Length: 165
Length: 165
DNA sequence: AATATACAAGATATATATTCTAGTTTTGTA
DNA sequence: TACAAAACTAGAATATATATCTTGTATATT
Image 1 (cartoon, rainbow over the protein chains, first blue to last red):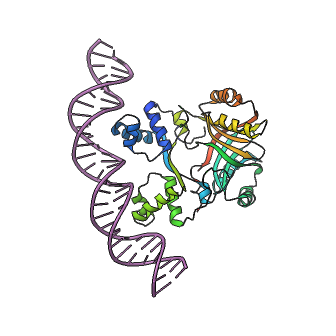
Image 2 (image 1 turned 60 degrees about the vertical axis):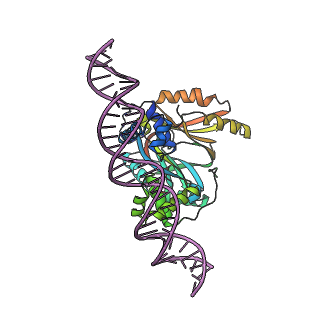
Image 3 (image 1 turned 180 degrees about the vertical axis):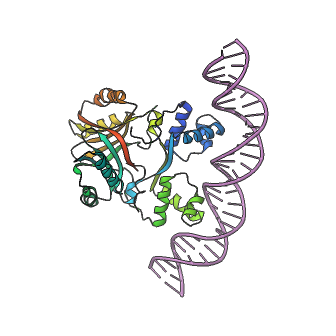
């Protein structure tokens, strides 16, 4: 599994799912507005939201930032292969990437690559610096295959439920 | 660029960045608490947050859901190559994937692949159904290289700023 | 030095969160 | 089917928080 947390699936009814969808698109909607949209009163909304939080269905509420506005104009995706796959080497690599601020996302993979990294940097120069001076300083790294994002078609990463009816 | 929105970089001072970091880790923090953490009063916090929202630095506030808790136990990453790259064919493919609910993220790439997809499904059976009956129904698709997420090392997708000092 | 900007502090009206009570409806099950 | 439990409505009370404004002070900018 790719989640460290509790793996149990929670019993959710349609009202729960509707609440989740609303909060996924607007974490700051008021209970009153939520209640109005679901034809309920605020009491059950309040209790259900608290329950969803307590059960870990809702992990957190976060602000989404426009990367371009904060000077991160280039997104790259890197598929990484390592030389050796011993437990220690894997742990060392993971610790390594976890300390690189440009790495915004990292997954350990099963398949023809070992790790997938999402990188956010200002521009191509900064990317080169990332590759040369930050990523490749791990001596166990075998090779990296990078792709550059030209446009975002869909991004509901934060929102895995939203698009399911 | 990979953002459709306004591309201008905004002038942000240290206080703005601190506010952003706080809201990235907790979109529901009160202005009062924010003010306390930054040794300010609520007035400048209120005005700065509104300004950040208005300028599009803060795109939105969302709830992050635990996929496992809602029955999405398998994450896959797919690198896709298309047969033909005419404008129409690209648009058709993008429309195609945008309508597949399992596709949680999709980027148009420069590099040796055309598209990167992040897929969230219940299990491997559901993934097969996605590949066979949903993704490959686009006749312009050449090939797909899939990897499966074993563990999440880092995920600050929603939070591109957080890890920069 | 003059001006503009940002902040502190305090006041106020409105909105929200949180918790209750009591009565009603729905649901699952013995 | 009938009962008990669970969930809901409606109304209300209280504590907090939000959203604005004002006035005076400190800090920067020109």
